[in-house]
Image (cartoon, rainbow, N blue to C red; front, side):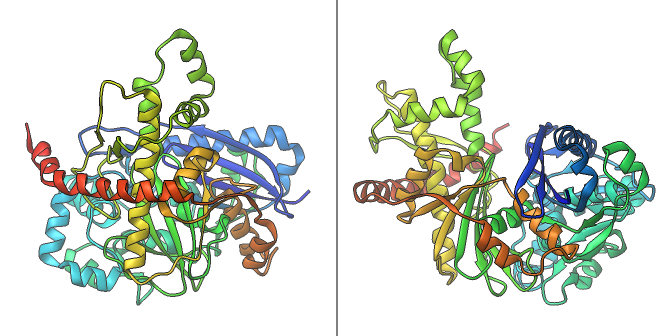
Length: 505
């Protein structure tokens, strides 16, 4: 049976899914890998971990799918973004990759502000200057590790490296390119002006492809290593947020979704390049469309912190936390009536949109001797929802309209969290019958790239079905409207204190 393979390289794991040509899931597999934090503000991953997990998940799928895995007609890889991975002329990584959450390049951002200025960078790239983007990371690498920089042949993104291992072709899809800070949105190519002004050799940047372009074919060595057939077409791919948007049916103007996992991302479809200095603009995987996104640094990660540091009090609870930690935490939160007296700021890893504050930190405001664990968990769910609302407010400030919102990712499995989001946003939130964190979107792109389908939007409309819609509740909307104001005020009142705290030796 002919099929399509979607691979997503996330921040915490690789997820690989096999679909038939009717886009029904045949098999899936996932595998985790670590993030390394060598110093405060640094975040690195080993590209070998990405590849080992990719190979492992493909082999696991082969065990379940049997002969079908030999009938794969196309492969598409999406990934976390942006990242900086330098490889040499033999394709060997020269260091661990600096991933999106790495903040070491703030001094290089100051250099960019002085030499180029925010207005020019916005005009060329459509986005702001911040360590989140790849450009300041490349500058840090050039200044701090010049010997390795001199040996660098290409800078690859996460999916770019996996695609290179699959095909031997160094590439960058246009969605990832638009997140680098080195891409000219008018010329649709690497910016010669930025490269010239900063003395960055653009030959070190890979060739840019549209997301549905075939970049190469699975070569013999990779076929032997993975169990895949030699010669399978591999398309350029895209960013995980773009794939998740496609999976949620977000293509045209006003269509929106939120994806919650370790972090969260709000994604809004636009028919032309959106302008918002406090959010992030990227190309859509579908040519002719763009996305306005609001990446939030830490949401599900805050729940994981609670699970790991505060979760279990008894031996019985330890067993529950090992089996079903998030279901149990949902139950604890649901058992607590909202009090409106506890507010959580989810900035445990700093914050990207719309604050862009590397020094922001998590705050639990309003603790008393009667505060319960359930109330703390609920406040984490609420605080993450307030952060999501902040991105929606910014999107509307930039002139965008929001017609509908879907929810995808691991967070969409939590009914209490979805209801809180609906109440905080004062908008219906819909979940999908099938959600795979972007794998379905990857399968669509692969099918289109190899010519098996001709209209992605038609397939999206046929295959995406609403599982459940959560509607705002009037009393909760009023309560959360007041709490949101307090949430925002707490940050504004403590913003300078965060910076002072960061300066303490």
